[in-house]
Image (cartoon, one colour):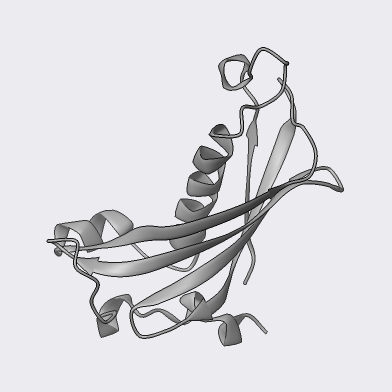
Length: 134
């Protein structure tokens, strides 16, 4: 399962060179992951209310092309690895057919104290697993 969502680059996300500031890609990727979780039926607000969360442990981003104001960007997200406690989601940000950025985001399931824990059965959804996407 590959989740897709889109957004339009806003002026305030751009730096003095006229392109999206690198830090804003983290926001774009976060938006894409949240939409991915909703697509697979993972209710993040309900997980938090139940005393759990999903923390980002690592982000690797390869910047390929500059994005500018009014570009329509599509964020694609899909799982590439899932373990008992953590996993990795691959993401792409595209403008049309052009790859703007590629990322791998490692996440960990945590309890209310922020301690990594085994993913409880009710939150261990098939869409988190790469094999469910083939």
